[in-house]
Length: 253
Ligand SMILES: C[S@@+](CC[C@H](N)C(=O)[O-])C[C@H]1O[C@@H](n2cnc3c(N)ncnc32)[C@H](O)[C@@H]1O
Image (cartoon, rainbow, N blue to C red; front, top):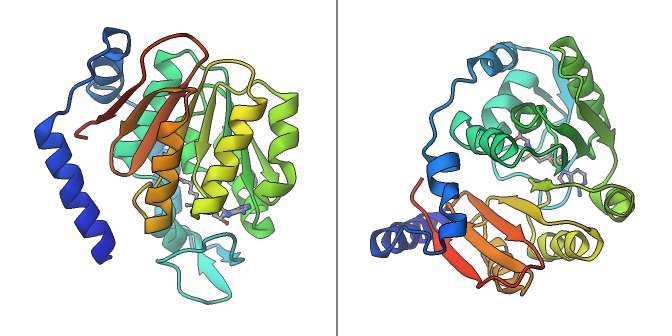
């Protein structure tokens, strides 16, 4: 907790020093993605459903686990929703990235109740969840709300990631599970190795721990990363092989 508070203060300082994208090719990110106002209130329907759902989900712990879910056998959907579902503020960024880049195909690591996937559902979303009870129930809920573009796969990330990357052309990858330094770097390296086109990778919780901070530092310095954006919660990287100057920015959000 103390670590995160300290890092947040450093983030504020960086924002005060400069919160600007210098490369004009990338300035859209601020105007079209961060500042653009949108109305996606229809997503509140599934949010409200989860808010009051007493359906019990069996807990299985994966990767780095959770700092907010106590060790127990079951959790109610409404409690899981409160603890791990993406906030509206960050969900909107995912929605606007899909919209602005006209993204057709997304891979997500870490489905949980599928909320972040819902924000990306204008594209075809493949989302991976290791907890079988959660994966099955989420797939059922998403179908109930007609989110037919989202495909929930029940698997551990490591067992399926490389295969999926080899067989598909994902334009955006959202990494929101197993927040350890090694896993985050491994997933990033796999994305670099197998992705054929320019891609955007969004990492959640880049200051969750010292390990995550180290992973973010490693990811930013890769030569293929042409733009890295630090929003404190999200770290977003744009990867392409074009010969453009690298830029690393911290933006207030
Ligand atoms: C933070 S939650 C995802 C939240 C979701 N993206 C959202 O914003 O609504 C992370 C999920 O990833 C799953 N997970 C973590 N590590 C995993 C692994 N190694 N393989 C498969 N699933 C994993 C957990 O079970 C958990 O449900």
